[in-house]
Image (cartoon, rainbow, N blue to C red; front, side):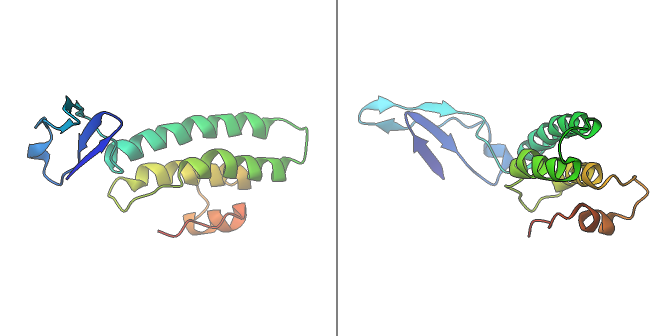
Amino acid sequence: MAFCRTKICQQFHLHNTSATRELSVYLDGERLRHECHPTYLGREHLTKTAGKLKNRNNLLMKLADYTWGDGTNTLWSSALALCYSAAEYWSRSAHTSRVDVQLNSTMRLISGTLRSTPLPWVPVLSNIELPAL
């Protein structure tokens, strides 16, 4: 299936062997530029999202060190705004564990728990409802 948008043509497919095939699509007599690397909601997307979450968790760690403000509420609302907004678009994939690891780190930062805390308790202690998959 091809998708054309503002002079760009992208091909989405289920077969990796078709990934390098370039399309020749014309619109109003003008050839559209073929985009070879469309953004998939798959492994590459989740890897980028996990990296983004790791950077944002580093910001939260800095925020957790300060004593100004209402620490718990500030950290909680910042985590929702920074981390959970970036992880909003999940897909069922074998690679969602990369994003899950970072979100678990976020919840551990909020709740102040250690890695030895059982994982099912971390969302409860951080008062964050897990997104429905």
